[in-house]
Length: 150
Image (cartoon, rainbow, N blue to C red):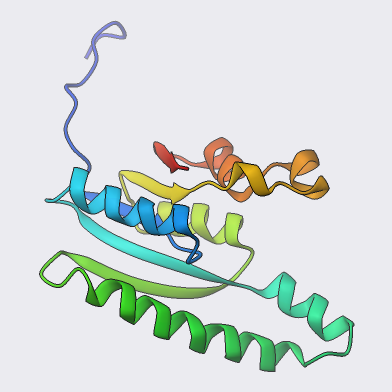
């Protein structure tokens, strides 16, 4: 193929939907299912271990307790959400780590064609203004297209 030629567009066959259980991330899943009905969709939730470490440092609960509780909540939420989409090609994954890092890493490991995720621009704190939201960081680092849903 010559440099001026481009490949014809084809719909994504494998999609990663990042799920933090916010309204935008739920809309992201609905959008992926409605726009890409033929795609294999993996719904990913990342248990934020940095949050668990901050809770542990404050002496509220141990890191292990926080991670276990967050993982249990995520399993219940994902089961309820995915149960609404019976018959669709949807798999779920829960991993632990930094959400931005894990989303980008798993998108590459799973060799997805597209990432779909929610974006909460109105809820930005000082930290996000300086470093960017998770969605913005994924946009900058991803190897594939990213669709952000408000």
